[in-house]
Structures are given as C-alpha cells and as structure tokens.
Amino acid sequence: MRMDNETSVAGTMKPVLAKLLGESLPVDFEFWDGSTLCGNGHDEAGAVRHTVRVASPDALRHIAWAPGELGFARAYVCGDIDTSGDLAETMRMFQASMPDDIVVAASALPTVVSTARSLGALTPRPSPPPEEVAPRGIRHSIRRDRQAVSHHYDVGNDFYQLVLGPAMTYSCARFVTPEASLADAQAAKHELICRKLGLADESFRNACRHGRPRLLDVGCGWGSMALHAAAHHDVDVVGVTISAEQADLARKRAADAGLGDRIEIRLQDYREVDDGPFDAISSIGMAEHVGTKNMARYFSQLYGLVRDGGRVLNHAIASVGGSRLSSRSFVGRYVFPDGELLDLADTIRDMERVGFEVRDVENLREHYAETLRRWVANLDEHWDEAVELVGTRRARVWRLYMSGSINGFDDNGLQLYQTLGVRSVRRPTDLPATRRDWN
Image (cartoon, rainbow, N blue to C red; front, top):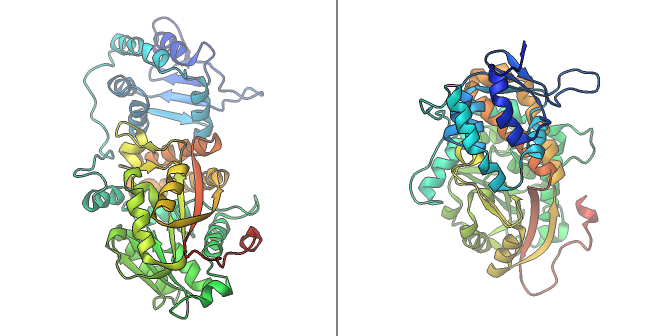
C-alpha cells in the first residue's frame, strides 16, 4: 500500500479533500493506484474502522458531472466508491466534516473539476446507473403514483422478506424493550395503532354498525396491519395498495392465516375507495406518497369514508417545514420518486380543516432509527442472497438509503409521527381518559 506523494492519486486528491473535509480527514482513503491518505478512521487500538475506497476514476467522473449527493450516490451504487466499517457511522463522520455553508461547499467545485481533469477522470461523461428513475406524467396523478410506487415496492417480495424479516412490515417498529426482536417490535406497533383506533375498546366497538369494527388500511403493504387487527381484535379489514406484488402476497398471507374471509386486499388507489363508512382507518407509511398539496384532499377523502365518531391514525415520516424529495437527490432519484416529507403542523391543520378533531400526536423517531439498524443488519447478513435476487447495484441502493436514514432519525432531521384524529360529532368521545390503555 503506497502512502501519498505528489505524483500519486492520494497526493493529487489531498488538497481537494482538505478543502471539502478539513485538514484532519474524518476517515482513511484508499485509491485505485494503491495510494492512501490516513485520517481518523482508526480506533484507539489502531485498527482500521472507517475507510473510503475510491476504486476507479469513474468515481470522480460521477461526482464532477453531478456534484454533491447524487454524484456520490451514483459512484457508490456502481461500486466505484466503497466503504469499510459501519456505513451509517461513516456517513455521520462525513456529514460532521462537510461545510454547512453552501457557498463554501460550492467554492470547492472548481478544485474538484480541475483535480478530476488532472487525473484524466473528467471525461467521458458517465451514464447514470439504470436503477435511477424519473416518473412521467402529472405529479401525484393516479397513473404517475403507480409508476413511483411500483419502482420502490415491486422489486421482489423475496428481497423484502430478507430485509424486513418475518414481520414483512416496511414502517417504523416500536421497541417496548431494547431486547425486543424486530418481529415483536412490529407487532407492538400494530397493537399500539389498534388501541389508538379503539379496536380493543368495548365502548367503541359497541358503536359500530356492523357488529364488529370495519377497518380500512390505506397503503396496506403486504397486509401485516390487516393480519394483526383481524387476528387479535376481531375486525373486518379492507386493505388497499397500488403495488401488484404487495397485493398478491398480502392475499396469500391472509389465506394462509385462515383470515381470507375477514381480510379483503384490493389493488386500488385510495382515491378510488367509495364503500364507506368504516369505523376506523389506518394509514401507515402512506402519506409520504400523497404530496403536501394533496394532503387536504387526502384527509377529506378519509373523512368521507369514516363514520361519525370514527378514528383515523396517520403514521408518517415528517420534517420541520416539510420537504419535497428533489429529483437531484439520491432518495428522490433511486428510492422514493415523487416522495414528500410532511410538516407536522401542516398535517394537523389539514386534518382539522376537513373536520377531524386531533386527539393525540406521538413522535417515534428513535424507534425508526433502531428499526433501520435491524433492517441493515438483515441485509448485510443475507447480502449474497440479496444480490442474487435484485443485483448488486440495487442492493447497494438499499444499504445506502437505510444507512443514511438512520442518521436522519438520530439527529432529528427526520421524525415519525402518529397523529390520531376523530371525526367530530360535537359531543364527548369514547376515547380513554389517559394513554394508559394504549401502552
């Protein structure tokens, strides 16, 4: 292994990395010619913990032609950049070293370009990986939403089973104890939602018109919420999804559990549901696909589908001020095209404006960070199987996405809110006096 000198790649790269990350580099670097730069990638015993390997000049081409997040992501997905050690922690160290001031960051671009040119790594312009997507049509139309959802969810149920484990639940779990398994934590999340919706309350159930509660699960995924509610709380469930692969597996799981007569899974957009009233509605990890401008219409649709006194639970990722995932961002291009993170205040306002009385708000962001750690561990444990199922590049997309999201929830850049609304009837509700019955 060659240390840096003026003629090595490491020696050439040292000034630009110092400009971007500071003189004390947060990690070690290895380059395609075997040269290295030593940073803070070692532990106290001297063992290497965090190394970024720049395996090809194509890494610099990606970054020079798409500066910032997207270029790095393209290089990582293609394997031109790799890391050793915990990827989430490596990304956290990078983030802490990057300049906050966008002007300072932009000022480094000419240095990046000139360095890439001197290494012969500026041309030709590289093609982006085929895993990128740019949906066509009117944003958040039914047709375009189907494209976006299919890109994310229709990558193979077997792959998701590797990552998500037996719970097959792709949303934030709830870890009642740190030792809880992922499956138990997902069951605890579903049980919490059932209790918030009143499915376990005698007084709420007595108000139901159909003898047993009727639950609509919007964006039902692979049917885990429907299965839990039907099995544990004697309810009839309609689950809707616009992912064909999710619908097929959800129906099979319901049939295998002997609940096919209690659970109906539809390949249907929420805007097409017209057979209310339901006693309760759960929306778990769905609102991020709706779009901020459409949230009032979304809640209006749910309001029209739930009976007087019925409850709606919205479980969604949020960020302060809201955020539309840019088509120039890694997540927007590879993971959640057209996705939007909601502002909590906007969510509450939109719910109230259509007539819901907001009765409870809970932030589970630390639980989502732990959920993501469990998913990353599952992916790493079954890496070879995942690659066989979806290919190396797509597996690397998911590793990068989930590792980066851990940091988002850890540092409060992202939150996960459960917001409970009741269709107001201008009288005392049958909600419990305290949260004690929900825990």
